[in-house]
Amino acid sequence: MVLKSLILQGFKSFPDKTEIKFLGGMTAIVGPNGSGKSNISDAIRWVLGETSSKQLRGAGKMEDVIFGGTRRRGAMGYASVRLTLDNTDHTLDLDAPEVTIGRRYYRSGDSEYTINGQACRLKDVYELLLDTGIGRDGYSIIGQGRIAEIVAAKGAERREIFEEACGIAKYRYRKNEAERRLAAAQENLERLRDILDELESRVGPLEKESQKAEKFLKLAARRKSLEVTLWVEEVHAARENARRQQRDYETAEAEYQRFDRAEKAAQQEAEEIRMQAQRLTVAVERLNGDIRSITEQISASESRVAVLENDIEHGLRNIESLQAELSEGAAARAAEADALEEARAQAQRLEQEAEALSAEIEALSRKLEEIQTETADWSSYFDGKNGAAVIYDSAKNRCIIYNEELANTRRSPCSTFKIVSSLIALEQGMIVPEDSVRAWSGETFWNGDWNRDIGFEDAFRTSCVWYFREVIDEIGRETMQKELEKLAYGNCDISDWEGRQNTNNQNPVLTGFWIESSLKISPKEQTEVLERIFGEDSVYSEETVNHLKQVMFQPEEDGAQAAVYGKTGMGKAQGVTVDAWFAGFAEQAEDNIYFCVYLGETEGEDISSTAAKNIAVSLVMDYCKNR
Image 1 (cartoon, helix red, strand yellow):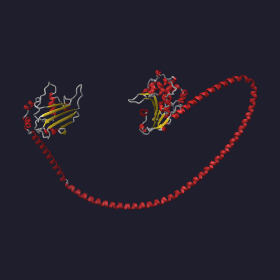
Image 2 (cartoon, helix red, strand yellow):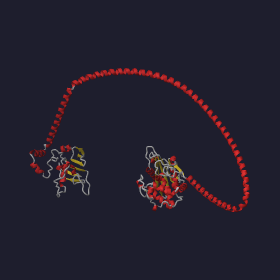
Image 3 (cartoon, helix red, strand yellow):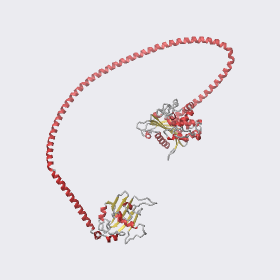
Image 4 (cartoon, rainbow, N blue to C red):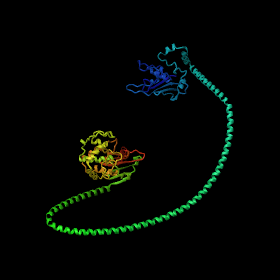
């Protein structure tokens, strides 16, 4: 039996898998101090079952055998060693020409042993190597200082080495094991005797208990028989009672049917009387109406006669007055002619404007007729939330709607109205993006981003209400009403200018007609308004539209099919979120796809503008991908 190979990985100074082959003859390991020569002998001792870390050089505890890492290389999580022995002479008690003993130790303290790849115990390795001289206590591995220890050792300690060399260690080990098992068997026998003595002392009382138990069983059987008899009698009585109750029920049912028929006949008679009374009442009311009509006609005739008589008298006086004024009227005729000419010119202008508006309305009507409206099932995007979605592809004149009833229901626009208020303020010059910072009043608001001087872009992105409250007040009611009617923005109702209808917030700088108040708009109307602002027929300046697009732009995600522009909005009533929006458009290959997603109050679900935005972006990206 000779060594054939040693494979190390993670053991002391061997982080990488290293294989050392022993090719016959004598193998020597040469190197300077500290190069790790002793680590190889320690690895052989360790894999053969050494459990004392003190026997391994440089290892204060067993975890130290695992490679601890360097500045350039991290520590290993385990140490593994496999030793292969030539067993062609069957020195080892295994039917195999080679025997590979393996050991692996983890930093957690877990350890594994294997023999030819099969998991085993340390005891199995120890017993396999008995009398071979290469076990953990064998003489084949003699480390530095070990010879001096053997010479200085006591006779009993030297005897163990000689017994190992003579091959009797195995038998001594088996003897010790047999003695240990005999001692354990003796202890078990003693315990059995103690138990037997204890049980014998309990035989007498248990016999008495057994007699009592037998008597109890007989009495219990008698009791059960009596109970069964009693139950049978009770069942017979219950059945007789049930039959009696059934007869009483059938009698009552017959009485009920008779009274029910009488009641229905009475109800039918009462219904006929009511119908007759109603017909009489209608006839009386008709006659009373005819009487009132005749009376009113008589009164009207008398009034007309009086008016005509008064008109005749007044006409006579006017004739006399006109005859007196005829002489003075020549000078006034010229002025009246000029005023008449001016009125005719104004009428002509108004007529031209009316014709232009009619033409515009007709064009819009034709455009609406050309739009193809479809419905779609996008419920999977909403995941049980109560909501609606509208996508309007202007290039294809195609409008797709999810939840048509809710898509046509008008709700408060909330912060999505900042698109329109920003548009009007930019167009009117009330917001100049380069110089748009407004001073903070010092009042502390719930949103920390509002507690500072803030510019247009930051105010738009953080939905700063006090900033846009000031902007809308500067626009004024008259201009706001005119612009909303031009955009056909929902119901165009700004009657609650201060936002007193808002039940969630009474701070005048944080509310207005667009926040859970008088102004309402539907998701479908939102897309139509966005098309009027950003579409080809927009009447707004290119500079205004570009500034608005800049603040509405949403950062693109990887693989996005189009650039997305939009604004969120959310409204509460008495502390509960009831409206959540995300409205905007996607720009793809110079075409605009307008969209709006709305979420309404949903039982058991929390809704938010962020959820509406996520749904809208997913919908639009999928639509653009399949467009």
